[in-house]
Image (tube, rainbow, N blue to C red):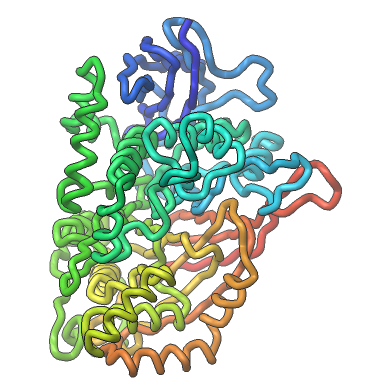
Length: 592
């Protein structure tokens, strides 16, 4: 009898018709996987094999729009989910109702965060890094099913930590190989990556949560290694390391299997030649390995970024790791092809706007017809194809000012503006200090800013543009100031929403460093760095409008009509006992 090793994960739910979904599972042997819903909907798929593991992404059809149905998972006709004696409610699939353009559409709830170290505490009564925010959310929803449930869970990177393994995983690794040999206590190959996913997704609360709340995922650095693709020098050094090739190929292969495929719609899966090849093969390992090798060698070879529309809310998840161009002098967060794709997807359906401002002598764009700082009313009779744009980028666009300025200075000196000696110093500091966010790719920072301004200023512009990010182990809200912007500024309400970690440590140095980064003293010192690095003047400024908050936390955006509501919840130990609870640290609204 086939057994269920991992899953089920409810991944894609069809928001266009409300009739379909996909469910991901791993079985312990080849089998026919089936999802059978209480309302008669369902679907089947044959497992496919990668490195001795058997997976299926099951298409579910016939769901009732605007409904909710419990489901079971069967392998070769035998039920394997729900688990016997499960303390959790039945896993369900909830579908949107059609007609989101009608008056009073239902809200779309998007919960997001990043950086979840899944290691279980050695003492069940005390977690040294505090309560897990995903665990705490699952417990709250399981205890009170009437609570508003997220329509989608957006996980913005570091779903697994390949370079920071738990004591239990280290003991397991030691049974496989000599940990005194590189990469030591870090994972080395595909099999060891699967161990990380088991540790993370077999957590009972998280397993149930992922079975009943659809999820969108993107990698960040720790899914492969800390500061993955920092610079050309970093990449050259890593590629000369004997164990690196197996690590990077295994990281990309396991990401494709466990995270990437579930991000795609059934139509996108049907058009994916690699997915077809893997499913048709007796063993798809070599095909996937060749794909991973080509993806690592050429950042333009494949696209990990993707788009999801939830009614009139659009999510663009942007790959800020594997799509980088690292050659000094050409450094970019995204390849030209990737940037064009992001712009096209953001503009799709907006009132016929198609152009983007280009760099000029006065800055990113020329002044608009109404002059700098003018924000006109929405064009009468023009309504774009969506009301809210969510840009999911694991790395924040707007950082604390001191951090941004230091990274811009570093990019300048590494590029040779202060000579060869400072370039060598700058490269050493870049790798030691994790100086590799959007600010460290100045032309890409400007390009993203141009894109946001163009989308927000287009006819039929969305009401809000929210950049969802994590990585930096604290949470904050930042709002750009467009008063010095050289072209017509966006009408859309624009916010940087940063939320991390979901579950990880918060060192005192991190708290102090980021508080200083937001301070007036930090801004003043940052200007000193910019002058030394001869950093060009920026026309965009921003200010912190919430935070910083430290702790294990999740943000939830509730989007309805042209309005947005943001809530930040922190996982805190319940003083009355009984585990943990989510406590709101912020609630705020804005309207486009």
